[in-house]
Amino acid sequence: MTQPTAVPSLLGVFAHPDDESLLAGGVLAQHAATGVRTAVVTTTWTADSHRAPELADALSILGAGTPRLLGYADARNPASAPAGAVRLIDAPLDEAVGRLVAHIREVRPDIVIGHDALGQLTGHPDHRRAHQITLLAVEAAGLQHLYPEAGEPWQPAALYAATHSESGVGRLGPLLQSVGKTLLAVPDAYVTTTVDVSPWAAVKWEAICAHHSEVARARPLPGLLARLPEPERNETISTEYFTRLSLGPAPGSPHKLVA
Image 1 (cartoon, helix red, strand yellow):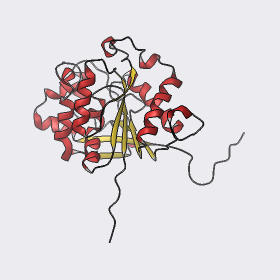
Image 2 (cartoon, rainbow, N blue to C red):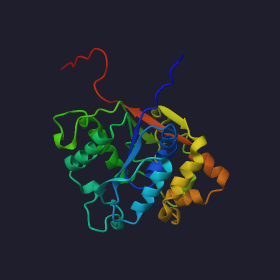
Image 3 (tube, rainbow, N blue to C red):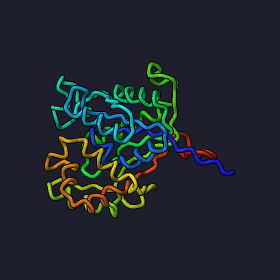
Image 4 (cartoon, helix red, strand yellow):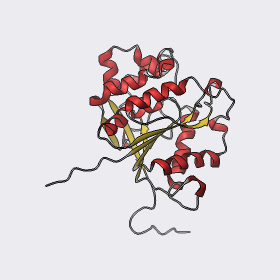
């Protein structure tokens, strides 16, 4: 008898509340539905900000536990840190990486999902910084001599960047351009994994809607999606795109460097 394949545990690392729902809400819901561990680290907006309760509601809907906040401010929104925390893009790199390493070692995920190098479709500086921090932290988490105060080493098996391909932008392109936002997408060949999350589209949309303050605004993507007819919206959110990034030493014989 063939044994069922174990579904890997997931840790998402995203810049802002709502990124987790927009970029990987379907995959998070899918994995949680199988009973495996899922969790999300959010690098900006602090626990005393108005979006923290919204994030908690969204994660509860997705089955991704409670908020894990690194405690930095959004580059463009002072309200993200009422107590005056430093912005993520201004934070010492070593400090930010160490904070994320602690979460990776605590959660011990098989797979980590984060932002792509472009910073998603709009190139937000927090997205790009979160991508950089995640790359460093995933490698550092497995090395016992780095951040020993952050817990026992743990090396995730895979790292994926949530992304959008040029052919997969679809209605998101006109939506973002209608409010004057930049549109950045990767070449189709850059996408290694395309996931049909239509069975979890309703859960994903419920999680997006939990970010009430963003749905109510005209320019953020949740608000733009809310104004679409339901069939178009479901089609838009029912596919998620990822790029698997290299992680750890490459197998086989090492290449010889030539001077």
